[in-house]
Image (cartoon, rainbow, N blue to C red; front, side):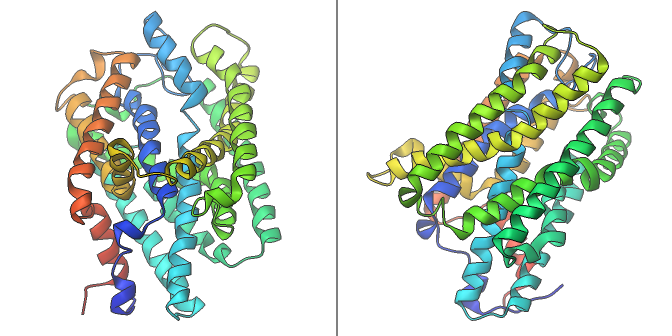
Length: 391
C-alpha cells in the first residue's frame, strides 16, 4: 500500500510544535498500561476476572484492588481515545496541505494496517494481550468516521457500548465456566509459547479487544474536532465535568469487581459476571476522565515553563509506541520461564513494582534522546512503512 505525499507531509511534526496535552497523556498513560499488563506475565496461580491471583498475600490483594479500581479497563479506553484523537490530527494536517479526502483515507488506512502488523509481531514475539492490533483494526474499519457528522459519530459510539456489554457478558461467562488453565506466560518452550500467544491474540483482537475500544476511539474523534486537548484552556469547564463525572462513574462501577477479585465478596457467578461487565463498561468513562484530567493539568503547565519531570513525561509520550513495546521486552526478559523466570516466584505487588521501574526506565530513555530531535525507532518505522521510502 503505497502513498506518495509531499516531502513536507512525509516529515513528522517537529517535537517542539506538538501539542502538550496529548503527549503528556500518552506518557502518563504508559504507566497505567505497564501496571495493567505486568501481572499478566505471572503464572502458577488461580486468577480472577482481571488476572490477579485469588490467593495472593494481603499486600498483593491490596495492590490488585487498587489497580482494578483505578487502572484495569481504564488505561485501554484512554489509549483508544488518544488514538482517535491522533487520527484527526493527522487527517487535519494532510487536509491543510491540500490533499484530497481519498488520499487522506489511504494514509489513515495504511497507518492502521501497519499497526495491525505491529500487533501481530508483538503478540507472536512478546505478549498475547497486545492492543496495537485492535487499534489497527478499528482504524481500518472506522477511518471514515473522521469525516462523519457528530450525530452519526455519537450513534455509532452508542452502538459500540451495546456491543461492548454483550461481548463482556459472553466473555465473563466463559471466564467463570471454563476450565482454569495457565496463561501463555507459564509455557517454558518459547516456540510453543509464541504459537499459543498468537492463537489467543487472533481470537481476542477481532472480538474482545476491538469491541472494547470502538466507543472510546469515536469519542476521541469527537474531542479532536473540538481541539479539547490542543486548546484545554478554552474548554476548562467541559474538561472539568468530564474528569469529575467520568472518574466518579469509573470508581463506583469498579468497586463491585474490586470486592469480587480480592475475595472480599464471593457472590454467585451471575452477579460476578455482571460486576465484571459493569467494571469494564464504566472503564470507558474512566479513560475519558483521565484524559480530561490530564488536559486540565496541561493547561496549568502551559502557563509556565515546563519542568524536567513534565518534559520527560512528554518525551515518553512522543515515544509512546517504542516505550509500549519496550515494556513487553522487559517483562518477557524478567518473567518468562525461558528468560528471567520470575513468573512463578513473585506476586502481584512485586510485578507492579517492576512495572513502575520499567516505565521509569522508558521515561528516562525518551527524556535523554527526544530533546535531541530523535524519535523512537518504532515511530520512525511506522512512518516509513505508512508513507513508503523517501524519494
